[in-house]
Image 1 (cartoon, helix red, strand yellow):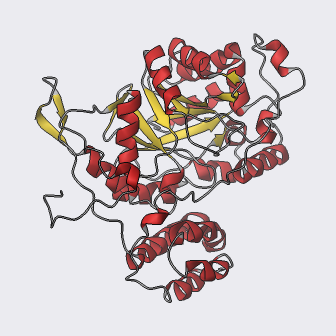
Image 2: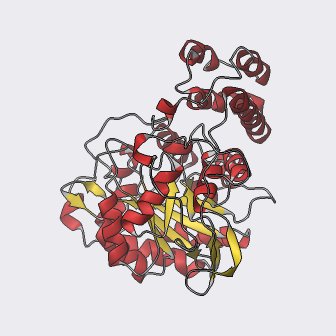
Length: 421
């Protein structure tokens, strides 16, 4: 139990009631080049989600690596104002991490070089996007189908990074009949990536069904670089289970933190603090974990929502920031009794004052519902047939980059598609 306060029963789903906390020295900090990340936790880059306001909010609750949403290289290089804004940061964000998207080695190399000049500490390459508009042109999760093309992209990143760690994030493959993660791991390791992240679902699955943690363990056994596991981290204890089951070096937290930024506080608790005295291997190592406090009640959550909304309004301007906040109101209130009746009105807010008025009618003493711990807060349960260019699978040894969007109109259409996916 938590030594800093009264004992309390563990607030967890049945799957996690008996999961042991991290033992002293059981897990090591995540090493990405010169970066040392503790706890070994990474905020997943999510389009329309992991902008600076949300990253800062998550960081205020815990520690880890907090990655930007996917930034289109061509839009960044052409100076698209929205792309530049989404790639931006503040002085308080360290380490600063940016995920980029491109299928063009020249664009990728140039963007990495510019980011490094800006002082970015880590760059990730998205090779797992399953959005049909992206895969239909040979991008995103279609790229690892062609290992030589992937090699050109990773090589271009590493060459221009000047020692800044570069990583890649992939899915298992196109569908169950076409796995690509093994080749992707080999290429990432050979071409200078500091780590590889695996979302343990195929592009066809989207976010449906359970993530295949066995694939994460298989990849960890096959490569020499760190492996980050992604998929079904709904509770802090899931991270411990994944790392123990797969041997992976860190976890990537995606949908589980939507409307629950305090999940990073719980993750910090279950992994425990760092310490200066010798750890289990004769080196400095982490202390053991502690029981997290129960999630906040609705009154505290409404205060977090208001902080989030104000940060979005400051970053994007009130009109756009409040529009962005609409989707968050559903994620924050998911599962609370009576919240469904209010949700339609929350989706139509126009100002921060509108939000304040609606939040004021909620019951501040309502406890966080246990049933909402593992409820998806985004992305439906559908699957898809993955769109690929005609004849794409007949030329898997080809390293020719597919055509990327180049005009500002194409870039804006592309980014709209990414956000809708």
